[in-house]
Image (cartoon, rainbow, N blue to C red; front, side, top):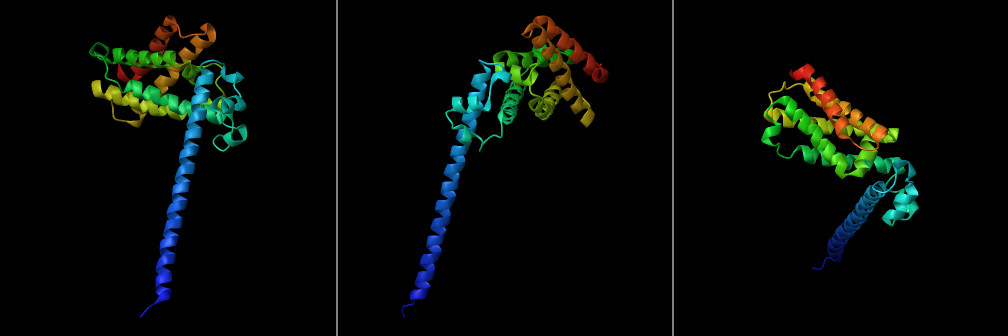
Length: 222
């Protein structure tokens, strides 16, 4: 016996599934395009910070450099501070990757040598990336960006603790992990002063950063 209703029901179910799949694919395409535009804006901001001071870069500048209409750009970031904050997060990943590289034997003979090496690693990243200098230790870093970057510094501090723990016996405590976050804040302050006073990170101020940072860690490790 022929049952048209049953046949229609199966066809309707199949069609609904295809509609769902089609909608999901469209959402994936839209999401992919959105991510690409978001990344384009971050790259544009990085490029602009290589050429201009942070206070001279507007949201319109970023959108234009990324090739995105300004009105559309607001779908991805609320304002220029929002873009700067997102870029600061990506720049912090550069520090994490750099600190995870193998430590030369001569730089891990004792905790002071290792601590000074970590300062050198950070300085190298800053020197290779002008946007990192501007956003993370620049004297004109927007407060909104600096406040958000504290969380990034904590993530870098955890990596520093892990590096230390591979070579130096350390207390496995939250207080000890926090110490490396404070170590970053102390050394970055000296590097910030170097940029403000000299316009660059000088060898003398690197030495001061090491002196300040190791002096602080000595209260835990000496």
